[in-house]
Length: 142
Image (tube, rainbow, N blue to C red; front, side, top):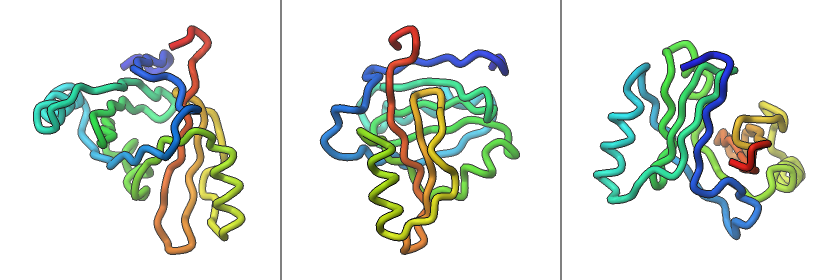
């Protein structure tokens, strides 16, 4: 994985039309194993992956297959992501951030740009830690 170049492929590059969040269960995998793992999840679920992208700033590669977010990286790169219970793909991260803070959630990682759009991480009042991400087309329209 080139440390400076983001590779981005998505079937749907804009989550603004989602009518409800899409929950993604995180599965972590070591370097060089993402393709085999994604193929296995495709076979098990009977669906094809609908996203594949790199996150050079975090030294990760990711794929989404059905309800699973597969995250590849070195152990030290994966460690901060293991503390998050799950990911929600949402239509508007800012609106979710406002609602969560009004309900007493603690923002652990403020709203910021990510390769797919924008996201943040919050600890809900019950203690669960969730990453909220919205997808938007990149400058090339991908």
